[in-house]
Image 1 (cartoon, rainbow, N blue to C red):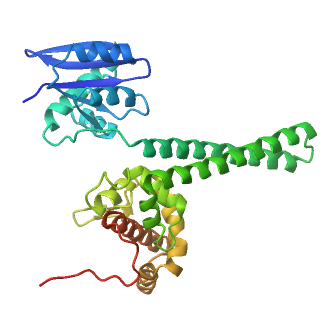
Image 2: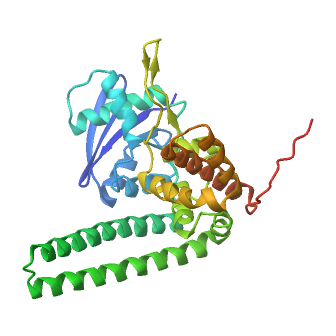
Image 3: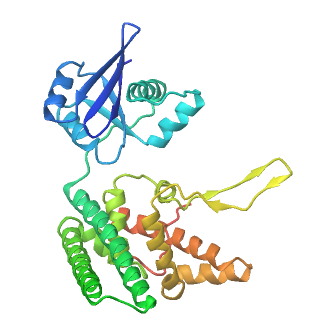
Length: 324
């Protein structure tokens, strides 16, 4: 059994916790190249390092450890949080968090998957997508502010000129970024982009987002894993004979791709034959419109996973080969 090293990382430093002859050891290093080198020199290369996916702060250290051939697992922070709650831990310090991550790693080490860096194309797509979403938010705020000032009946000319300038610049920046995203996607993942957009109702934006969040569909072995990751998996609320709540999707995944797929479902019910048939079938059963749209979005995810992993374009009347 290899030694487990838990790391709690922040912008400036990272705390390390591990057991040495049954004694708990705690160390602090700088979150930079100097700190990385010092850390690697002082640990056993056969150890397993466990850390949380803490925003962008973990990426540099994780990449350095990967290049140094040190086993590393990056876990979902929610799993560690639930583990801490299960243990009834109340203290919240960097030192304590590193110890909790170490304990979680010791308990789950047989099921932990090893981390590897995302491809250059996916990193670029994610950064540009995040920037685009931020600019879109700023654009909505600027437009709402201009509309509010106009409604007041006393809009200052300089204010109007400034806001309109900001709106124009922001709109141009969004268009430029979306154009660059498409070029990056065509350069690195042209085949996958072509396959995904062959599905009626799935356009470039949705296809690019799917490629980015799945690392070109290399992260998942089954479409159910992708559905759960996105947050479209159903959540049943039932206990005994008295508690029978309404079913909902879990919403524990990526909200951006859920929004895109939900919008795609509006056109899929008309132009995607399988989805149209599903729409009519569920409509005849009396299902609400929103429930049907979620079911169609789920179907689109299955179709996307199928064409991307099989490397075959969408076939409208496809029938799987069944051998008896």
